[in-house]
Image 1 (tube, rainbow, N blue to C red):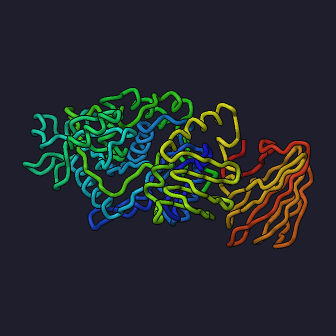
Image 2 (spheres, rainbow, N blue to C red; image 1 turned 45 degrees about the vertical axis):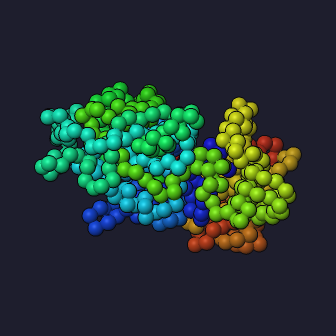
Image 3 (cartoon, one colour; image 1 turned 60 degrees about the vertical axis):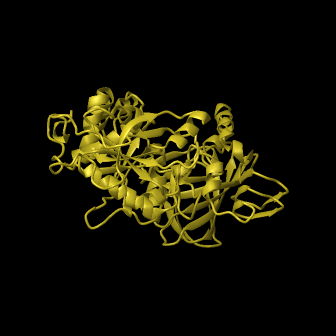
Length: 498
């Protein structure tokens, strides 16, 4: 289901909302009488900007800003961009930092733990969320917490004297109270440990005091910038340079911010954990952990998805049009057609319009090997689905043959494609739902359901939806070359013109 052009966070795996939408809703739900929650800041690859924007629009959450990475440089530069954006605006908020591809079953438990972390971060601590382990998991890193509270910070190493640009970061906590230790469920972090083997993981579970690292952090923007400048000044300086060379999209309604491309490419790629968190224990930067017991999962493989889905009496979890007989502990995700199972155990079957996966549920992580082979072969299935999402809607290539291709196209209300032309193909458009506004050369016309029009080869044209319901058309392309790269854009509200 996850492709390079439509990654896991945008999939609906455990409900009606995508993992990204669930993450945004969880964080917006943290507001209380003494905690105000600002609009979310999204850091993503620039190719996914419109997916994020559209999915936030669907759940009626306003975007604060979208910080668009030209290439991936891991999570430390990503968090630094967000912190710099806040500092530029003269703010120093508490940042709740979370991946967008996780799921949480118990929302109330999540909110309670996060509230605890937020209050600790307000006192100047760096706070990490630790997952209470229920099995000897070898796929996660672990956090080892101290059995008792640490001794007070050495003199001169309170928050107002942390390494940074020389300016005080935070006021001291009340007399007699150490930073980040308000409340009953906050632990000092002793150390971080890498993903263990099975025997080591069993030892961690038996010993207690070890938690899974969920990659969720809570800290002030200024504390992050100071800690990064102290531990990894190379990343801090390089990211600041890329931020200073940023540009803002002026031809879109969204707040898209692009750091300087050449400078960003030069940033060392590093995670938040390696760059800062693992260096904090014993340093001038107090790091604490709040346990999270909320049915968390990072859904790293299909077996993890099976674990969190509702199941029938035989342990089967099914999505879509599925019929089974005498089958147990299976996971089936049917996206476009009927899938049936007879007399099988512990299978994963994932059906999409262009590919089918069948795997032993215990070995579902090994799909990575198949993905690597698809990528090495340059196959399209690695990058996109047959149904391809665009900022204006989507298209589904439903048939193709020699010198023709048929697409089903949906255009969102008030959206439009670019003003464009093709050198090698003509197009026939048939409206099946809604109203289309067509630019065809020097003519503009409106056509509705059961009407059609023809775009000659080489003619400048545009398709738009002026209505309030989605527009659906059937497009028939014909010509000598039908590739997606046969397009010249003259005007585009999404900034895709050259």
